[in-house]
Amino acid sequence: MPTIHVQLFAGRTVEQKRALAKALTDATVATLGAKPESVDVIFTDVQREDWATGGVLWSDKAAAPPPAG
Image (cartoon, rainbow, N blue to C red; front, side):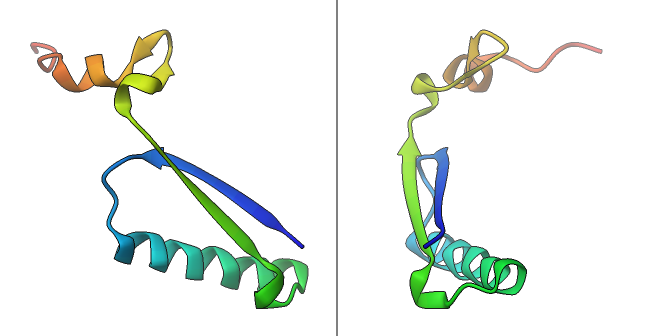
């Protein structure tokens, strides 16, 4: 029973999540030979202020003006 955990920024639509769940399931079936009904996809919506890359919150990156140049 493959379980796929997907963390992404909040704001994706149900249609986008539905399409991604289908694509991930199809890829898992094709790659692992799993049955579609055995593939679980769990979405976790994360707020930008709860995710940092390189020590910088994504909420701060979104608020920062683009670099000059």
